[in-house]
Image (cartoon, rainbow, N blue to C red):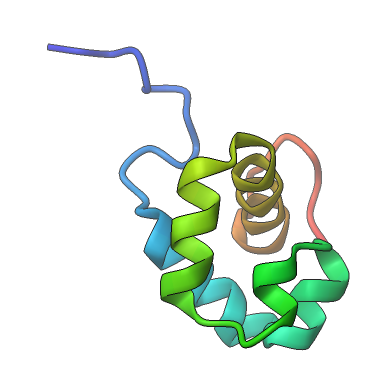
Length: 80
């Protein structure tokens, strides 16, 4: 049994669910102002965002952090 991700707050949460929930909460324009990524600004879609985020670790880290800050009640960075 692998316990490596037991402390990972995002363990089991798919990237598509993260992006979709953030878009639903913020909308594309507000999400783009939160995280300055072209795929959130120019003709945004979940599919294009996932393609970019899966290839770009720094962008994925930013979106994951925003998700935690926005939706996690027990995140170590505080709540917004």
